Structures are given as C-alpha cells and as structure tokens.
Length: 294
Picture: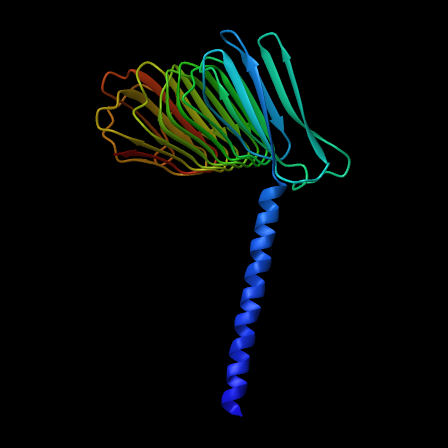
C-alpha cells in the first residue's frame, strides 16, 4: 500500500507540473499576441527634425537612409488606453503616445524604434525609458525622470541630456558640445571629447574615462556625489579640483600652476600636464574627487 501511495503522489506531481507548464506557456503566448506593431514612414530632406515622446516606454534610434524616417511603434498591451499620434510638417516629424482615460504604466506603454538620417536633429522624451541613440552626428536632446539614457558613437553634434534619477552613459562621443544634468542619477562618460563637456548631478556619481581631448573645456560638478577621472599618462590639461567638505586626491604627476584661490590641503589640487591643451574643472560640495592614472 505504501508503494502504491508513493507512485500515486509522484504521478499527481507530474500532472500538476504539466498543467502549470501549459498555463505558463499559454500566458506567454497570449502576452506575445497582445503586442501590436505599427510602422510609419516619412520622406525628408537634409537636417530633418524628429521628435518622439512617450510617457511609458523605450525609445531607440539608429541611422537609416539619408531621406527616410522609419518609426516602428510597439504597443505592449491589447488595451484601448493609448494611441499613437503622428504628424509630418515639411522636414519636421512628431510622434507621441496619447494616453487615454484610465491608462497606467502597463496599458499605456508604447516602445519606439527609429531609423533616421544620421544628420537629423533628434528630440526624445520618456519618463520610464530606456532611451538610446547611436551612430548619429546631428543634435540630440534626451529628457526623462527615471529613464536610463545611453548615447554611443556620436560626433559633431550638440548633446543635451536632462534627467531626474536615471543613469546616463555616453561612450565614444567626439567633437561634441555636451551638457548633462541630473538630480540623483549617476553619469558615466567614456572616451567623450569636445569643445565643451559639462556634467552636473545633485547626489549622483560622475565617472570619466578618457583623455580630455585637445583644446576643450570640461566642467564636472556635484553637490553630494563623488567625481572620479581616469586618464592616460599622455593627457594634456590644466586641472582644478575643489571639494568644500569632501576630500580630493590625485595619483597623477601634476606640475604646479598659479591659482587665484588658496589651495587647501586635502580639499583642493591644482596642476597641469603636457601642453595643458584642455581645461578641466572638478567641483563638489561634500563629495570626494579623485584623479587617477590609467
């Protein structure tokens, strides 16, 4: 009897597992079927202006043909709580998620994938994100509250990023005018150079890994966050670092230079390397500042 009971329990367990698996598979299939994709195509001339705004959802942008904008909108639910508004006026394209009454983060989510001319001016806005753009050389603006933002392989354009809490990452961005502001999000810059590179965060961390280019002005500021710069031996720049309440440190050989402000030991360092081609200013109220040699 005991062996029969064990056999029955094993059989019941297998049956339950099969039922659960079928239910999960059915649920996943239903979720996949619930997605709705819509594609929009526009013919544009040089230096087109493209704007995309969604309250909930991701936006990713890559280069396409020189005279076409292709937008793929994926509605993540089969609900009737959101619709896509789209408009073209000459060389200007506007795409926006229109939330209807009762929409929430799930029923109002729309993700966008864009192929645009590389020289187009681009404006992206999303509260939740993520937002990403790569391999473009037009002007770029990104805005969001919690959205993670990624910009890669860009050149020659103005890049403006504004966020409240999202992490911002720029990599391989050259010859650009860069301006990044965040309330509490971290900012990561890798191989980012240009005539002007500014990054500020209230409580987030700023990390720079690169050579500070040649002839640019770099200014990183935080209130409570730390600042860390990792540079190669052949970097050429003037460095000025100061933290009102935090500590500053460098393990990089700096030549003394004249400063208009008194250097407080442990709170300030001032020095130059190479031909001092670029100007680098690092400031924090209570965060730590470190300049490290790669």
